[in-house]
Length: 464
Image 1: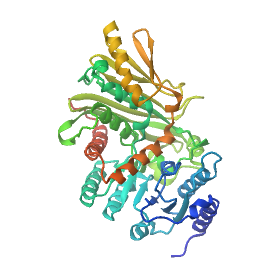
Image 2 (image 1 turned 90 degrees about the vertical axis):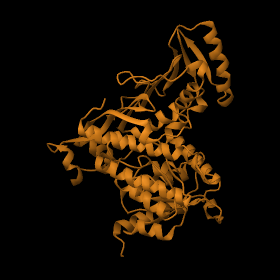
Image 3 (image 1 turned 180 degrees about the vertical axis):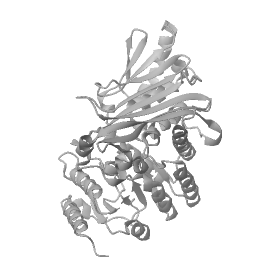
Image 4 (image 1 turned 45 degrees about the vertical axis):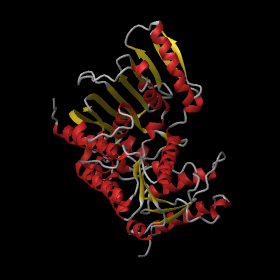
C-alpha cells in the first residue's frame, strides 16, 4: 500500500532521531535479550516505560502504530530521553506505520513483550490478540473500560495462563513512598491494630485522588490527544484512574492475599459527574482548533465539553467498607499538582495520607485512636526499627497526639520514575517465569469492581 505524505514525514522524522542516538544502539543483540514492542502509543505512559534503560533489554524497540500526531509525540519523547544531558537513554526505535500495523506486528513478532498505552477503546482487543499470538503484555491502566471488555480481559487471562504468558498492568502508585509506608505500618499490629470493618457512612479505607488535564510531563506542558476527552475511547473516570485506587485498597488491606470477585466484593453505590471544559481550554491542551466530530455528542452550545472524568465507588472488600473517588479539574492552582489522600482506620491507630493542593508531596501520619501512653509509644518506636531496616532514614516526629512520618528526599522519586519500577518488577516476573499467585485474581477483581461500578453509576441505583 502506498504510504501517505504525512506517513513519510513521520517516518523520516523518527528515522532522523534514531540515527542521533548513542553508538551503543548498534551493538549486536543477544537472542536471550528481552525485546520490546510498542503498539499504538497514544498515551505518554508508553514513552515513560522507556525513560530508563534496563539490563538484558534490547535497545532496539519495534513500534507499530498509525502515522499521526500521537506517534510523533511518542517519538519526540523518546528522542528527548536519548538526547538529555544526564543519564541519556539509547533507544533505537524501528517504526512501521502501515494501515495493517496491528496485523503486521502479530505476524512479525519482532519482540517478546508488547507494551500497550493508548486508546482504551482498542486496548482490550489488543491485549487478547497479543496474548493469543504468544506475546507477554505490559499494559497501562485501564485494561478494561466496561463490562464487555472485562469479559474479554478475563478470557485473555485464561489464555495467558494456558500459554504460560504474563499479562500485567502498570500500577505505579504501589511505588509511591507514602503508599508503601502506609501499607508497611498497617501490617504492624502493635502500631495499627486490626483493620476496622467500617460502615457505608464511615468506611474503614478511603482513597481520593485529584488530577488535572493541564499538566507538565518531563518538563513540558503535556499535549493531550483529543480522544483522551472522549470517554467512549479513554473510559470514564470511574474506570480509569480509579483503577489505581482500587488496586491500592486491595494491595494494602489484604497484602499478598487472593481476592475472588465472585465472593469477596459487594458494591453499594457509585456515582459519576462531569468536568466542564471550554473550547479554548480544549484547544490549549490538544493544540487543535475546535472539537472533533466524535466529541460533538458531549458538547453543549458548541462551546462547552462535558467530560465524565469523575467517579466515586462505595463497596465492601472481604467485609471491609471501602470508598474510592477520583476528581479531574482542568488546571491546578499555581505551584500545585495532582494530590492524593487516603485513610486506613485501625483499632489502635489511623494511618492517614494528606496532601493539600499547595503541597508538593503527600505526608503520612500515624494518628492513635486514644491518647498516647508510655507503653504504646515504646511499642511504636520499637516497631519503627523494622521499618527502618527496609527503609533506612525513615523516622517519626511527634506532634501532639500524632506522629508525622519523616521521609528522606531520596525516596521521593516522582511519578515518572515509578514506570521504571513497574517495568523492572515485570522483568523480574519474566525472569522467574511467573507472577505471585495473588496478582492475577486481584487484577480480575479490580476490573470487575471498576466496570461494575460504571454500570451501577449509570443506573443511578444504590445497593444496601
